[in-house]
Length: 221
Image (cartoon, rainbow, N blue to C red; front, side, top):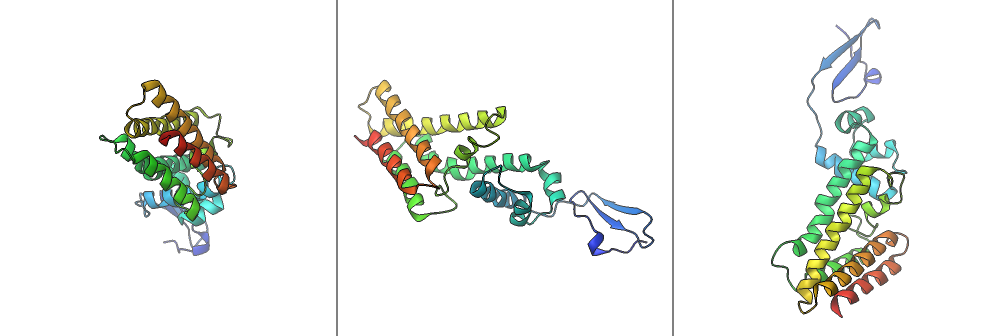
């Protein structure tokens, strides 16, 4: 029977590998169940990607944040890109959509769009790491090495459409007297200003606040 040598153990969620006492063969314990919470690991990785961007997020940083060794990450997510895809999905579901939901659920309150913009500005003012003070993960991805990837491009386009739809609903609820063309113009202007604010929030919070002010003007005047 082999003796477990801690320094010779290779970490993986698929099997444990032990070097035997005779140093002549490997013994495999196959089928060990996953011992970590996937959602928690994805959230931890999401913060690394959000802070550093996809290209600069190094595997050692992802291992440290998630508490997983590299082989566990590869087994659960395939590779760094797979982990990033999971982080993007988590970002949309847990960060973006909860903020948009009041403008995507009927009936939309007349002040829903103003509350949305105020919340974004407040998060930048407070430098809240879990909100938008570090910009937008999807917007920053648009300037990364993944920008040309078809799946990423589709995700970013879908994100923009989702924001525009929400803001369109918000403008319509705030200014019901406008024509459809007027609503569309204001919604697209507001969407552009929000995305512009996200693009510079980390480097220029004051400029981001200015853009959000312009977005507010587009939906209130």
